[in-house]
Length: 222
Image (cartoon, rainbow, N blue to C red; front, top):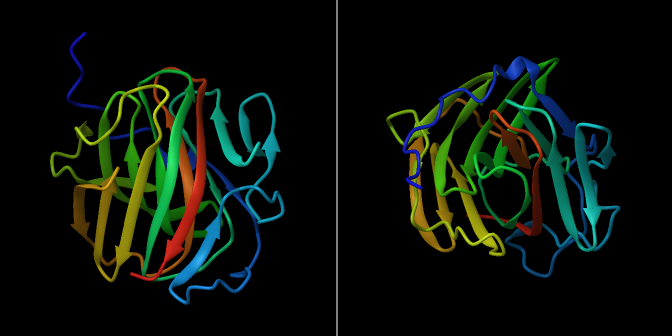
């Protein structure tokens, strides 16, 4: 079956999104490497990520990984550990569990919120091999790479359902870049957002039931 080369620019108007955040301050143990700002292998369920389960949303520690699932359509959910950083490189392992290939998941940085207005940079892939990078500023979503404003295919994404895709998102000054499995995928420049939390994000389109596992989060200085 041929793969679609364009996706809708809008997953949803973000006013309807759900933010799942642990309301903790920037904290954590001292790490042996002074360049490490945060790391988590999800073996300890007290590291601050959201734990939530209802008929639509699951975010939970699960057997040494972090599981996120969403049953509704056309929206994102995200989870945050409660940090506040400016420049960083975020690494995380991600793996498909269930649901439609037509999905999106990945990482965010510089997340802030004011009331029901959310802002962050996002770095996304899909289970059918597409990617997009961009920003949400006060609930307005803009894809900045690809410049077409649509998801585009990335050969670096491993499409095997049993595969782990390693994601690397770098936020350094006004330069944001993304690599998948060690291969550079795209970058963009923007100075709208200066600091904030990191996070994990998943989303659906016209079919719900997306389930993604994350593991081995590492945040380090650029």
